[in-house]
Image (tube, rainbow, N blue to C red; front, side):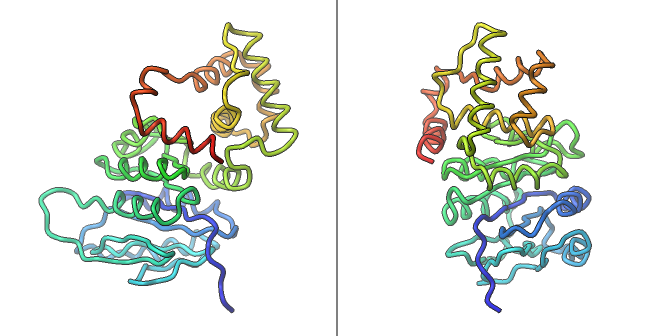
Length: 286
């Protein structure tokens, strides 16, 4: 039977030692019409058992990528240890790693191609790892109006990669691997817009709660931006419902203060940063 193509592709950048966090992530992934591509930092001489090991933790089909392979929904693709990988026309393409003195930036390479191929249907995730690979790829995905996540640097065994990603200021969700699949589901289902009447009411109530308890009034801010940042805070606090998050806010003034800080944008730096301007335009055009 002919399989359907994915409506979103989730690319995951991780270090060679990130097996535990990948297992945790895929313990929670559903069959929901998306595809996953894992780009690890691997030595050209490293022989991985990743396909076999990860298949024990996933409902999805797990494969090592081959040159020209068509990406299908509900499948996971792993980068071969001795290759760079890109995507174009929903197909994976492999090229040999060259001998260089510096690190092979395999994550940036794939993320940038995914941004070009899938645009706002691209999702990039940075897990534990050394160095800053993935940071430029994160910028490319956001410029294409996609979504990006990073694991919490403070709990990461190797915090350098997620820390560099978070430092861009572009990360939509900073979560533990176990929480990421739910956040992806909610993002795909609801996007960054006010999606339901209940969500709209909750956002208005939250804005009024902040106005009542502080000198800040966000009622004139763009609703897609406010909604996206509220959902990010709600998910970080383990709430998938904005109405439940609102009830939590009413009892926790400290969280109200943190949410208000999420809404604040440095106006001077915003207008100096063309990339930030382009990314905010994504929210206004969706």
